[in-house]
Length: 105
Image (cartoon, rainbow, N blue to C red; front, side, top):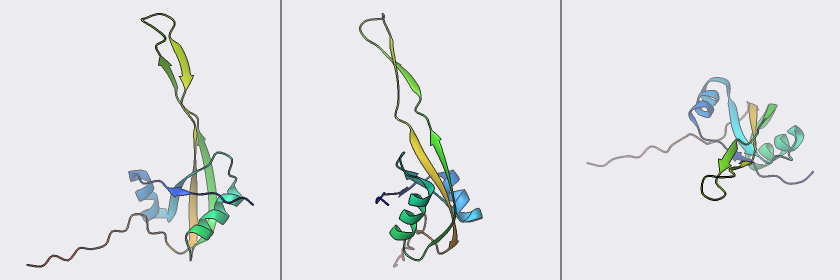
């Protein structure tokens, strides 16, 4: 197995999934499969046990660009991305936790 790097995705939907279903959202490489994602999450975040991995690929949007004044518009597409929804059976990942700041008066 190759070593892959998974990065947590911080958004409102990801926060809601963490608090309600113990599911974390990660950005993963396009070439990664579910077994590699599971191994990477368990190795990067100690004390976690992965119960389920669901992946989805978002294709890049097609965009138009100008090739000169107003004639011959070109089209291309942005790069696609892959997300992994990882449900944990044991442990927690500190993504949204904040340290409490004590104020002195």
